[in-house]
Figure 1 (cartoon, rainbow, N blue to C red):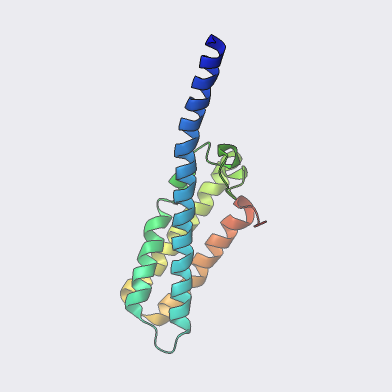
Figure 2: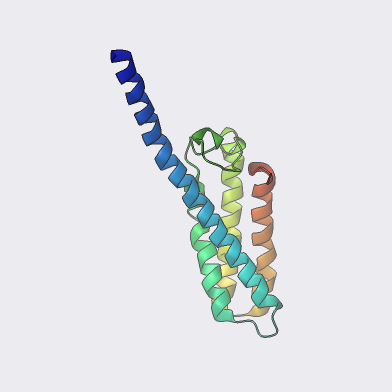
Length: 148
């Protein structure tokens, strides 16, 4: 009986730890979806006949704001070992220096895009946007598993 009680307590403790990590993974994924939607909205605006700088500004601010928090979205234990569906690869933690450099590149690119958007010049916005896309892709190439 004592063994059963210890085993049950261990299961409850494991579930208690796994649940917050699963929630963190879900939050991370939701944040990335917002960033992706913001990128799409900016691209859509730039392709439209009459881009709204106000809308672009709103989306670039979201990307810039999330970019500085992004590295905190990957605490140890928030990979596949957490038991939640995630495409985060172990390289995020085993090659953390590279991951950090890629995150820093996104911050720089996102801030430049946001500065261009705040300036309101569509030519500058168009010039800054590809660096954000490249920063996202560079990280995805090495640190995110393909969709199944």
